[in-house]
Image 1 (tube, rainbow over the protein chains, first blue to last red):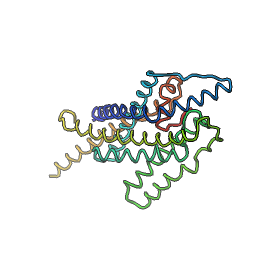
Image 2: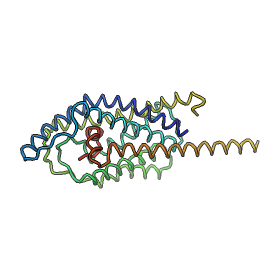
Image 3: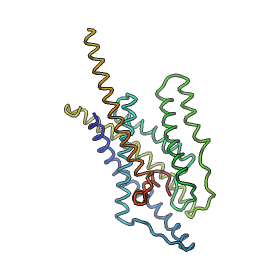
Length: 220
Length: 61
């Protein structure tokens, strides 16, 4: 069982990650590179010049590896959650779990922390990371209570878990972005779309690979 | 009949346990990968994963 779960996660995440990396290459990465031009110009003006750590092909490769790692992680998390809740693992069902996961890690978190371009005003990183994680987990648990539990009390707790994190959202930084607002708006939208695709694709492919592996008698 | 159903119950319990064990391994590995790519601090990890962190709206910088 462990072998089947891990094999499914790795294959689904690898394929989904490659597709998402290609999508990033044409959607979010050009916007990040454009924003870095403004950021570098501002830094040069301030007297502090710093180049990007990676450029060209090595940067694309590193980004793709990171995206594949996240996609394998997403696929494994979805499979684990479905196994724990005892849900049947099939492409459409895992994709739906993926949609809920996107609502937790994408929609809920972007309400308090909009996706950011390099060079945008920032506050303390650790505080933002803690809020992001707590919000994603709380929203995920809340959606589970709302959609999978029947009692009225569970649904009330579910709504509370979804709403509560937003009372503790990090204070936005004073706007002093070097990136133009148009660029930032396009990036926020593109980032959410890319994240939605990664969850849905990792989920659908995990369901598909799981079904294929389950057909082989020795794989069970 | 009773013996059969208790055997079935035992088989069901052991397969449930196996599923939970697999889920625990997948959960730890899954969160580990997302943590490494999306949150970890070392500069080399941050630089490599930089564009992905921004693109998938993980908090960055």
